[in-house]
Image 1 (cartoon, rainbow, N blue to C red):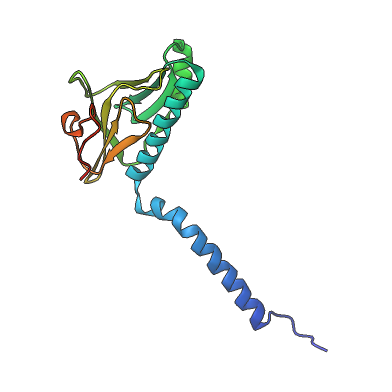
Image 2 (cartoon, rainbow, N blue to C red):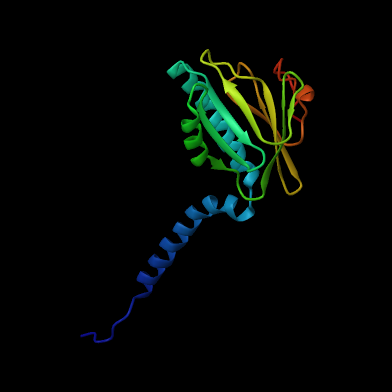
Length: 176
């Protein structure tokens, strides 16, 4: 009769194998966080927001606003006809840009450039949006997000692209 207590070699191998499998499954989730890829996170979030606001504007038949606060690095969404109180609530729930990512001046069709304060992009109830280009910066990397008036997604450039270079009106910009 065995009186010693302990684990068999097989039990230890199984436990180590399960721990290794769990580690391998968790690595991709932590990879972006460890590398500090805030631009990638911001790109994914902004693309999702623009797509959702376009659909929401059509579904609710109400113009939607994507508002970027260049001073605080936050993004809020609300309806164009919302009251000041509702907008204030939206800003309290605003999404902050990832640490180290900052917004650079945005550009619009009329040649306007937003350097500080809030930049608002309208998504209309007919499914279109105000064409615009937004620039994000992290460390030595730039990212330009081009919001097309008729297309459902953002075009992404992995470098700084001006409004004219993006050819946002035609949708033929060079993505090199």
